[in-house]
Structures are given as C-alpha cells and as structure tokens.
Image (cartoon, rainbow, N blue to C red):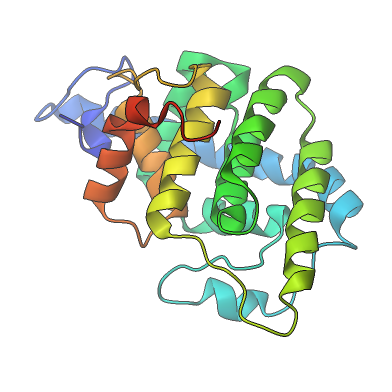
Length: 233
C-alpha cells in the first residue's frame, strides 16, 4: 500500500502518529526551499539558450488556470511554476529521492522529465521521451534534450497550425512520467516494478506536475509499471 506524503520519514519508514516526524519534514522542507533559490540560477543558462524558441505568451493566464494547466510552458517556466506552487510533500519527496538515488534524481532532471511528459505526450512519441530519460542519465546534458524535444514538438505543431492539435490522454501522460522517472532516477529497466520504498516519493513528485490526476490514477500507474514492458518498443 502506498504511504501518504507525510508517512515517509527520512529513512523511508512509516512514521504515522509519531510527533517528531512532522518537525523533521519541516527541516527538510526548509532545506529544499533554500536549494530552490539555487535552482533558478542554474536554469538561467538553459533559459538563455532556448529563450528564442520557447514563447512566453499567456504565461500568467496559464498559471492561473484552476486545473493547473501548463500548456505551452517552456522548461524554465514549468520549473518555476512547479517550485512556486508545489506542496511541501513534493519538496520532501524530491529531497528523499535525491538522497536515495543520487545525481540522476536531482530536481532539474526530474523537472525536465515531468515537463516533457506534460508537454509532449500526444505530440511526441512516448518512446522518444523514455529514450531522452535514458540518455540524460548517461550524458547529463539538459540543453541538448530540451533542444531535441522542442524541435520534435515544434515540427508536429506546424502541421496543426490551422486545425485542432492532438491532445494526449492524461493517463498516458502520467504513465510516461512514471516510466521516464524510473528510467532516469532509479535506473530501472523496462518491465521492472517500482521498488516499494520509491513508490510514495514518485507519487508525490508526479502529482505535483499533474494536479488533475487522481490519487488512484497515479497509484495504478506506479503499480502497473511492470506491465508496460513493451509499451515503448
């Protein structure tokens, strides 16, 4: 059974009902807040290189959308929206994931995968997003993956300039996000199940990007990961 956000302690154990756990979560959350300030300086380099190709039209209205929509947001904008609006559970989960799995689970890479899944499914082949996650774990090159993704997405959008663009299903987006994070952060192969200790962390991270997804949808995506072994062939 998946644990609730604050049922996950620093050592990954179930801490329901223990008063000290809440304070430890507060410490982690404050540490993550301080770290967030440094993330934006790192994102500036990426933003400058992709700024010309990634429009900032209607940003305020999109961020204000009640469903938490992030349509057409560039990577730096998406990161800012998540970091500014995500609940404490996301910050705690991100900190714990990076502690458990090291650099491949760092927040910039995690946000990149979430961005590609949110923006790309329905336009870019899901297997390309999974492949990008696999490459990123090795190359650690965010800029080239942003460029590849934007070019692929832009090419498809040109075909739908005068007609309604295709829209990926929410369930497919969540599945791709889960599978890409498993590939990137955990180093899992296709068909391998999500470890029990990582499931609640991935759940809270994915939920921060897909506010419209139900808890059951995210939980099912995590538990059915092994059944999608051939989904990206």
